[in-house]
Image 1 (cartoon, rainbow, N blue to C red):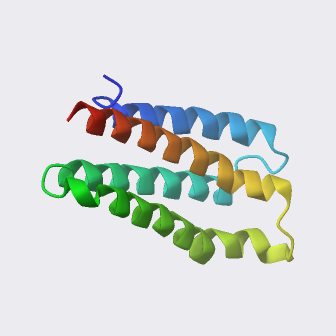
Image 2 (image 1 turned 45 degrees about the vertical axis):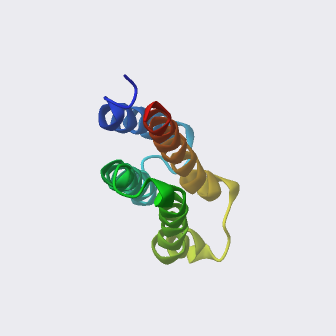
Length: 121
């Protein structure tokens, strides 16, 4: 059931956490916070879709594909988000949380859904 509603669960959970996160941090609902959640949700949805489509044709390669997609998330972080966080030459714990919380939530949700699907087959 979880994997059937993956997209709804991921987007709803991320939207809820975005609201809570924006209310808690001192900078509020900043563009960087929104961008971080958007990028992580987009990459998780894309990764889920790719692995779901390839699960029957290339089951022996799914682990490598998942690792590659996880690596892509970090590449996107270093190219897109890190320059925004380091504008003041200091990455604070708040800025780290602005990346890590959405990354952890989206990757965990994606991993759980994929594991459940792949274990059924």
